Amino acid sequence: DTGLVTLDPGFVNTAACSSAITYIDGDAGILRYRGYSIEQLAERSNFLEVSYLLIYGELPTKTELDEFTEKVQRHTLLHEDLKRFFDGFPRDAHPMPVLSSAVSALSTFYQDSLNPLDPEQVEISTIRLLAKLPTIAAYAYKKSVGQPFLYPDNSHGLVENFLRMTFGLPAEPYDVDPALVKALDLLFVLHADHEQNCSTSTVRLVGSSEANLFASISAGINALFGPLHGGANQAVLEMLEGIHKDGGDVDTFVNRVKNKEAGVKLMGFGHRVYKNYDPRAAIVKRTADEVLGKLGVNDPLLDIAMKLEERALSDDYFVQRKLYPNVDFYTGLIYKAMGFPTRMFTVLFALGRLPGWIAQWREMINDPVRKIGRPRQLYTGYTEREFVAIDER
Ligand code: SDX
Image (cartoon, rainbow, N blue to C red; front, side):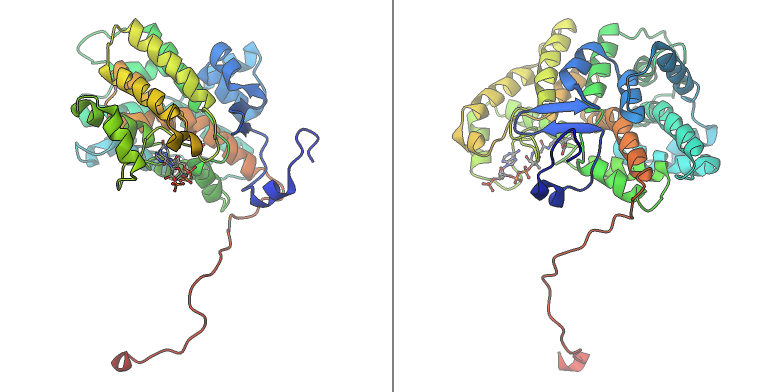
């Protein structure tokens, strides 16, 4: 009993770890970062402020936020040798392995700040990652479209700079639409942390061996790439495009899911913890409506998504299995309306999740009773047996 919440002993036995960062009530559809509800933060905060909250535990004062912002802005540039790193990838490389490789490579450029037990080195690595991941992500996109890289311009905020480096061209001025900045900033807030999900558990496990922060985050990016986790936002768009190609026939698709056709799932639905509507999905759905409206985008895939949701939520198959839309169901429609190709969707998830991964890694590395992650197993193999010579097999 922590005095804050009373932990059910059964729960404690199954819990991967204790943490004071994010609280989820899957049945009630509650999500809080450091005690603040996701609805309040979505409405009143922004991505850098939420990053500060997750990493340092408190909402910053104006001075603290200004100093934090200034520190992050000073580190957005990549080392020129790291810029050349992108030349080695094939043109059609998926940006997620490019992202994880570049982040891992950061540990070769900052060998003076890799010690996870030195708070100063952890701090500078934290700032470098928050500042450089958007630049790396923009360069991964530019590489995929064969366009020149744009250097960061620190007169812009982090999210605006990312959009400018992604969609801007040296040949002409590019004014970032403030509505896009606001919507992407909100989506990053919604993705910023989510308790002990697959990629966050990976970051904690890798870091528990005292591997450096860059190596641990690179591992988290690889875990996030999986289509059952962060890769789902790309898979949702591919699912909706498939239904659209079939004339928007939602019923046929739903029946294929219910018949458990191999590899056919309702992507963007279901969750290991939420057995209710994912609170983030409700906010994303509203944002999708607003952004597409503001951009004057009339995307038939949005109508299909809404029809699919309505159909599933009224179908016992999904209701009995407590399958509701999760954060990935609508996000891809917004990213698409912003101009991102589907292969960049999970990269955007990683950009949002970065402060959560860092906060969770720092909490783990500072845990006084921390042990190296070393799960045991339930052995189900052979009992001992005698070796058989090959000519007797
Ligand atoms: C994220 O953990 C996190 O916090 C993750 C995340 C985060 O912020 O980090 O929230 C981000 O990863 C969201 C999830 C994105 N993934 C998808 O949208 C992919 C589609 N969803 C499923 O793969 C699935 O719902 C999971 C993996 C997300 C959760 O699966 P569960 O809770 O382990 O459910 P299960 O596999 O035990 O399935 C229970 C039943 C099964 O049917 P039965 O065997 O009982 O007949 O529900 C069915 C499953 O077949 N089912 C689905 C389904 N998800 C579960 N059937 C159709 N479509 C689906 N999406």
